[in-house]
Length: 225
Image (tube, rainbow, N blue to C red):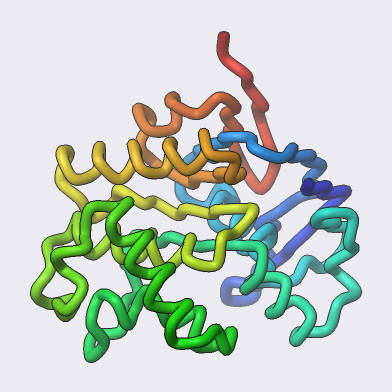
């Protein structure tokens, strides 16, 4: 599904170049459940941004479902991202003036899905994630766990092949965090490839494959058990 070869990315902080990704080689198969861990500045979020086509490498190759992404135009990358990838972030990134349902339906509005189909799919996913009774609530009227469920519903509404989660439980209490993790793992069991970036060692240890990053490199690639 994903092949990274000799992927590099350097940022300049002040007048000092910093290698965020240093010759990364990584293969990810369909349906894998992978956690990415490491100290701050190790390259975790940069790796997620590269895989999610939110940034471009300085050099190297990245193929997604046999398509070389580094030579794609921005519109081509955006189309691939919207059709095949979903994102869940620590900060939710919900639009305050839109209801839960409207936030969830937004990717379909941008994709010009019919109103009837939007309503059908949003109702289905809200029922699955246990937020159907909050469909007309604004984000400020929702708890942290409910907001993250709305964000997760929005991420999967277009049925992505790959779900990228950056600290998905970072703003949640332990109970709400456990519920979100259970939902992510259920989606993975249904066939979605799941990549979770986290500082939480307990969450990271749940993944079937665990990447440990250090200084822009994959220091360890573990498959426990």
